Length: 171
Ligand code: PNS
Image (cartoon, rainbow, N blue to C red):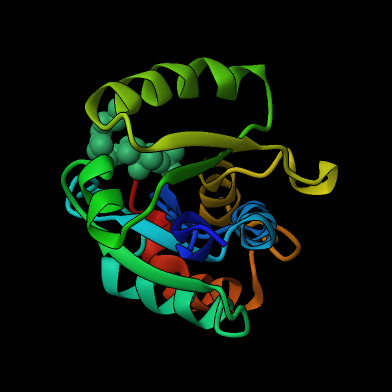
């Protein structure tokens, strides 16, 4: 057995996760079947207008993935490829729901590989039933008082309900 076969394959699943949706859960679960270890990487600092604080996003993701042995959750700021290097990841996993996603993802994948040739981007196709979910739509439905159950994991739904009408009224 070569040394290469003994090295753990680590992937990063990056995103804003504001909030974590059932689409994200689908993606991370698929990634955990392909890689030895998956680090869910929550981008913080850049998005000052995030609905959920970085502490909340981190706690919720940790709660949701608590049962996934191969998955851990962390926050990052700065360049994604630098974070990937710090955790020893050789892959960035992103979901492709549609051609529109590919249009956004392609320049990022190419640029990230330019910055760090040792890290490949891997695209996974989500389950059809979660393919129309986005954090943006979830927030819009929630802000307008709609039902977000079935779109986000239970702990996220509970947290968003608890934010209440005061937060919902703010633009
Ligand atoms: O959930 P999102 O908002 O689609 O995730 C976007 C994310 C976090 C993957 C992207 O914005 C990112 O990687 N930001 C970190 C800064 C960085 O590395 N930028 C260069 C990308 S080529």
